[in-house]
Structures are given as structure tokens and as C-alpha cells.
Figure 1 (cartoon, helix red, strand yellow):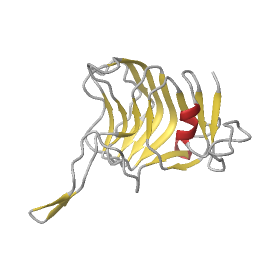
Figure 2 (cartoon, one colour):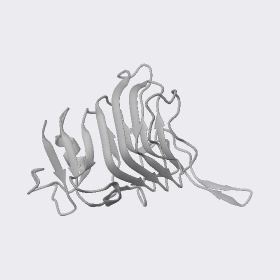
Figure 3 (tube, one colour):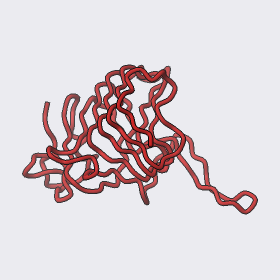
Figure 4 (tube, helix red, strand yellow):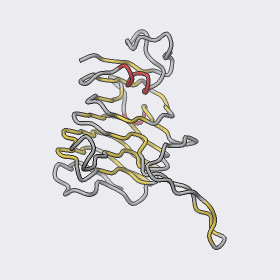
Amino acid sequence: MAKIYVKKTGNDTTGTGTSANPYLTINKAYNVAINGDEILIGAGTYQEYIKIEKGIKLRADDGLTASQVILDGNNYTLPNYVDRPGGTLNGNTYYDFTYKGLIDIWASNVEIKNITIQYSKGRGIYIFSQAGNSGRWNNILLDNVIIKHCRHAAGVSQYADNVVIKNCQSDDTGNYAPFSRSPVGVNGLNWP
């Protein structure tokens, strides 16, 4: 298991992913990661969409809190599963939306800790699997994740098992919380 570092002072071209020579983006670190690796993110705001298809850990670097590591969807357009264009109806404006999260999880053995996700036009986090694709996802941990100002907080597919959500908070989000499965393993959840 390797530790791969990301910092706002890093460089995706010359960086090596070490603490002394980190990458600039989470996606660069993810692209070089293999199953079991841990991506440690430095303080700052990152405007990225992350699709996780490997069993990795994604967390704030040692000593940082969730409020210091921010994944921000403001002014960022997510790729869509289903696209609903915006427009006007009877003089009222409505906006486009997506079902994706800023973090989409399509794998087992994933941990996300001490991160804030904000301003997603879709979900903050989406754990997605469906019958007929690669199968069921297992052993997913969301710990001390703050989701705020998103269209929806989080979504958990009906084909995901042993999903543990603890010490998480959702604030000023739409109507989605964990769904499609009974809330077994959901503890320490704060939906203000």
C-alpha cells in the first residue's frame, strides 16, 4: 500500500506523489494509484470530479480537518448519466441537473475521510452499481465527510453492501440521503 500525496503547491507533470514532491490534482494521484493505495490531500479547494473504480482510501492529509480539504463543484460541469437541460416554464427558471456526484464510487473497499464536498450540481457522493455491470460493491466507508450546498447529499445504490456512513454531516442540500437500502450500518449521521 503506497501513500500518494496531493497539495495545491504540487505539480502533475514533475511531481512524484511523495510528500516532498506531491501531485497538484486528486485525479493525477488517482490515475497512478492501485488497489489498496491511500491518497492524502493537502489543504485547499479542488475543483474536480472523481470517479473511483479502484479500492483506495481518499482522505485529508494528517492533521487536517474536513473543513480544510474541499472538493468544490462551483463553476464545474459534471458529466451526466441523465441530463435534464434547464429552461423556463411559465416565467420560472429551472436549471439543468445531473445524477452524478462530485465523487462517484464504482468499486469495493473504498474509504473517504475528512473531506468537505460542496456545490455539486448533482449528488455530493454517489455509490453506484447496477445489476448487469461489474456487480455489487462492498466495504465502503464514509467517515467525517461534510456535504453542503449540493443538489443532493448522497446516494447509495441497491447493489452496495456494508456501506458505513459515520460522523458525516449534510447541510443545505436537496432531498437525497442514503437510499435504496435499509439504513444498516448508518450511524453518527447528522442531517441538520
